[in-house]
Length: 162
Image (cartoon, rainbow, N blue to C red):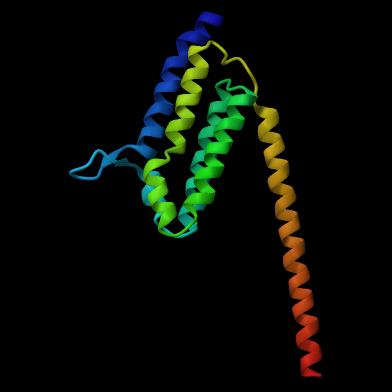
């Protein structure tokens, strides 16, 4: 059984290698060695592009979790995505940063090293569940804050009109 899993791993990693390469290194700026991919192009659309890029990177991490990445590796991957998303959201400077900080390639390299160490039988699902709960909590807090601002604004405007 274990031999079947090990025989199956290289094709899975190759697929992830191709996808992360397409996202981060597919094209080259003529006359330079600077490479970029779909992640950079999507990121040029202010904010919406960064959210879409975050979503694609998150799907890649979920796929890597399915292939046995450990909690430690998943935390490193999520950190790469966090850095890429936060700094990438800054207009112009974030786009330049995206040319050089390739979170998808970094994450693929983390998984490849993890496989080479033979440590791919771990489970990072608990990290994903924790991050999901954190995002859910932040979303609920954001909705609550928006409701409070609307309520305050409504009360303030009502007092001005009366």
